[in-house]
Amino acid sequence: MTASFSESPRLGGTLVWYFTICKREVWLMARGVEPDRDDEFLALGRLIDKTTYNRDRHCIDFGNSKFDIMREEKGTLVVGEIKKSSRSIDAARLQLAHYLYELQKNGVEARGELLFPKEKKREEVLLSEELKTHLDQVYQEIIAITSLESPPCAKKCKYCRNCAYNELCWS
Image (cartoon, rainbow, N blue to C red):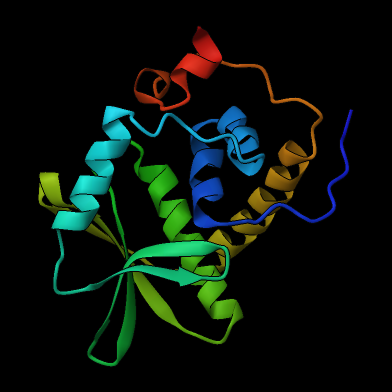
C-alpha cells in the first residue's frame, strides 16, 4: 500500500547514506521521526565534526543536503564528508557521490574526500557515469520506500547495535 504526500521527499545526503545502511531508517528519517538525539554515537559524530578540519568551512547547506566541509584547492572545489569510522564506507561513498552529483546538476564541478580523522585516513571520491546511474536508481528506490504507508519491517543487521533508532525498532 502506498501513501500520497503533498510534496516529494527531500532527497538529501543523509537519506542516501541511510539507504545503504537500512531501508527502515530511510522511511523514519523521511517521515521526520528523529533518532535518539542523546545517542552517544551521534554525539561522538557531532564532536568529531566540530573539532576537526578547523581550517575548512563547515556545515554548508546546498539544496536538501549539508556538506560537512568545503574548501578550494588549486582552483578545484573540494567537498568533504567527515565520518567517525570507515565501518560504513560504501554508504559514505554514495552519500558523497550524491553531493557531487547535486553540484554537477547545478553546473558546479567538484571532487570529494571522505575523511576519517580518528583513523587518520582519507579517500578521494570522484563522480563517474556509473555512480550517477546508480544514484538515479537509488533516488527511485528512496521515493518508493518513503511512499509506503508504514515503515519496512525491522531487519537485524550489523549496524543495528549502534543505531540511534535501535530502541524504536527493538524495544
